[in-house]
Structure formats: C-alpha cells, structure tokens
Image (spheres, rainbow, N blue to C red):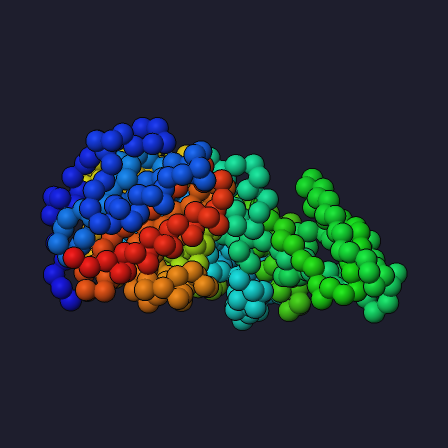
Length: 496
C-alpha cells in the first residue's frame, strides 16, 4: 500500500464561515471546486447549509473545502467517533458478558434467594428466545426446581438512564431508539404482526415475537372486504402493559406489522427467562423485577472479565455468555448503523474510563479520545450520545476527516475501515453504476433534514482520499443524497 501522509496541511484550520453563502474570499478554487461548489448553491438549497472537506491521504493536501470548520449535526456519522474511541479504550478483543447467578444456597432443589440475570450491555444477547435457553438449562442442571426468591434482571452495570440527551420525543417510541440497558433481549422491542383471516368479517390473526408476558396484546382487528384498505390503530396503556389493536386489514395484504419498544428492558429479559424456566418445570415463587443500581465492585469484576482479565466473576454463577468481539460489533454499528449497539458501546466506554455507565461519562471519554489521541480541537465537536440520534451532537467536516486520517495509521484502524459500507454493495443502489462503486466506503448519517456521508475513496489514479459531506436543514434528504452521490463519483474519477 502506498505510504499515507498525515502532514499538517491535512488538519490546518481555516477561518470559519457563517451564514448560508460563502464570502468571495472563502470560495474554494481548483478543478474539484468548479465541479462540486455549484451543487451546494441554487434555490433548492436556499434554507440549507452544506459543509465539506476532501483531503488526499496520499499527498497530504486539501482538495476541496466548504465550511469545513463549521459545526454541523452529524447524525449517524457520530458513530465513527464512538467506535474509534471504543476500540482505543476497550480494545478489539473486548466482549460483553452476561451472567446468571444464584444469590443464595440451594437445598433439596430449592434456591433460597434470588435468581439474578446480570448484563453488561451485550447488544446480541437474547436476540431470539432460544439464545436464553442455555441459561434456563443451567438452572435445571444445577438441580434447582424451585426459586423461593425473585427473578431479577440486573442492569446496574450501566445504570438507570435509558434516553439520551437531545433525543427528540418523536423518536422515543421508535424501534431505532430502543432504550440502551445493560440487560435487554430481542433488541428491546416486540414485533406484533397481523394477518387477514380466510373470509371477510373474520377476526385477524395476531402474533407476537418474541412471545412474552411483558405486554398483553388484545385485538379487535377484522378481515375486510376485497376492496377495503388496511387501517389499524394501536393504543398503548403503559401503566398496565396493555396493547389494543383495532381496525381492518385488507384480505389482499399478506401481513401488517409494528414494533413496540420495551421501556424496562431488564424486566423484559428476566420475564423471557422465567417463561423458559416454567416450561422446564421450575417454579418461581417471587416476582420478576429489575434493578439499576448495584455494587461497584461487581461491575469492576465484570469489566475485567469482559477484557479477558479474570475468571468467573463471582460466586454462585450458573451460566456465562460472552458476546462477539468488539472488533466484530464495530461492523454491526457502522455498516448497519445500529443505534442500540452504538449506545451500549458508548456507555460501556464511560463505565471503563470514567467509572459510570452514563451518557455523560461516555461523552467525556469520547471527547477526551478525540482531543488527546486524534488532536481534534475541543471547539470542533460536541459529543452527546453514541449513535447520533441526539440533535445536540455537533462536528465539523474537518474533525471527521481528521479522525478518518488518524484511523488509517492507528493499530485498530483496520476495524473502522472494514466496518464501512462499500458503494454499490452496502447501500442498495447508491452509486452502484458510477466510478465510485467498489472504490468508495463511507458512513452514512440521516436525521430529519440532516444527511451526512464521511469516508474514504480511491481515485482512478490510485490516490486515497478522505472526505466528509454534511448538510443541515436539507429539506429533501433524497435530493441531498443525490448530491453526495454525485460528489462521490467525482472523487472516484479525480486525477491530478
């Protein structure tokens, strides 16, 4: 591979610009500027603000800059900061650990105490009910047939926070904003599917995945006539855990589905385990409950275990599960843009570095990494959460390019490189039939009126570029992506 240059030209600051139009002295020059700059102007973007930076990692010079030092809401481009910091602090071999343990003695098949399921934030835990089966089997193997205490979901490793600062109310009941708890299951959401009956007027068929007792779902949805349209209303009584479906489903429709977000993930996970225990003949005399505060020493033990630095975390452990490595999870976070995984990693960084699994602790640790390791000025970024859902996150295009340049030299940088979707492969049809296909890899970012694209591209002449293109107040996300895709193709075609 051609030696990459990270010279001072790459990160040298330019004077910030304000407003939606550039002053004459700030307008970029050069062949790329003549191609790219007009795409950011015109009536279609009169309410929008664009920022961009393109640098050559091969030669170390800046090829195009447009408000490169203005702070923008980066949306999911914030995941680049999160994953890079996590790899630095936790290491690519880090694994989340989930433990099931008995809090009391077992005598004649009876556990005199609680059965506790303790999580450290594994986003892959219990993605289906069968993943919990080994935990239920371990109870049976231990000879336990009755639990005199409670079944406890322990989420104290990361604490009680389940909503990030700056998350807007319209996001909170969406599956992509499922609450990041140290213990959860099935991505902390339940899927409800409605299928039409065989004849008009028949009651529709409703299935819940995974089956659970956390929500009670009732339905008065009927199968409509041949020309009827599907109209289904969902009512949620949060205080009683009741979900009521009403309306009509068209017989021409194969199915209709919606997701319900779980607002107490630890209780939900414990409840799924209880169902498996009951199916195996184990009686639970107490209640199913969750806890979010616990002994710091226990969290330190689990953290050491996650780093591969210790044996069984504490006495009474019946079963232990380790997640895939952080190096593997980084691909899930950046390639699939998985918000839940990003937030769990973000807060685990906070637990590791700052001793608390809070959003604030995670933000402080990530900001510290960006400033001390990458050399990004503190004034260039504002870190609020790990996924980019927060509208309080801010980043300059230069800060993102600077991170990308840093990662091409860092020991863990290959995990960032490999985690980025490739044009024409990772985003459906985006840039599929352009020179960028197979040569551009980047992280997307989308919120309402926000679109971002940051990554790498190899030009026709073999030069490697790093770039960031962000628009806020876009008006049309589809049109913004078209502009980003055109620029991606231009960069791939660029030649000195």
